[in-house]
Image (cartoon, rainbow, N blue to C red; front, side, top):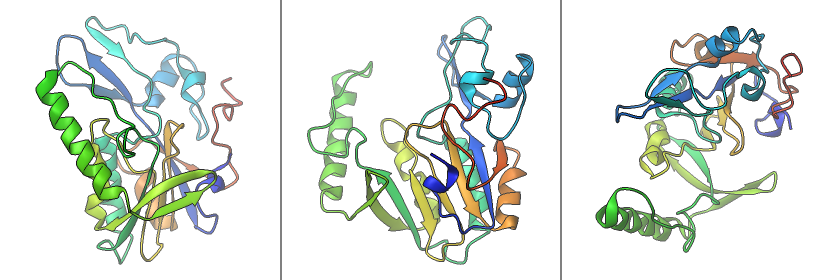
Length: 235
């Protein structure tokens, strides 16, 4: 698969946003996030637009600091702080920020009746709250329109651009998979198996994405590979 497998190839420019690496504090503190670039540099790897985390990483899970555990970059979901930064950037590059389209893969647990189980450390009360919220969502989206592309089916929503983070409150903090404004000024795609999010838009829009201090982003082309084997420099 290539960038154009998930985004229209009609945009002027494209960017790849790398999903940050979460570091969890075993002592109960909130998570911190690491960019890929310092990890690659520490391991003597080459930083380039098509680098893949499995090719630049030198540690299986441990970051080496006492009391912490490091995850891999999140697959299929853009971290919330990065999502808010992206929304902030994109709001300045559309005339229809109050009219946007959002697609969420229907295969996520909890969106289809009978697809969710309630487990965890929160106890019965938390499980009951999550079950109630999930059942509400299932009922609300049962008759929602669907969009099918490349063998996947998505639930289609519409609303203000600020609603792009609506599912970050879902139990799994899930970001949207595909979203765009009604004037088609840009489009965002997060394929469910990948550790990156891709954006297509005008040159000015993509420059804003590339230069945002919160986003670790690189310019890419529609024909660039996006699979885990695309890093032919470091692997």
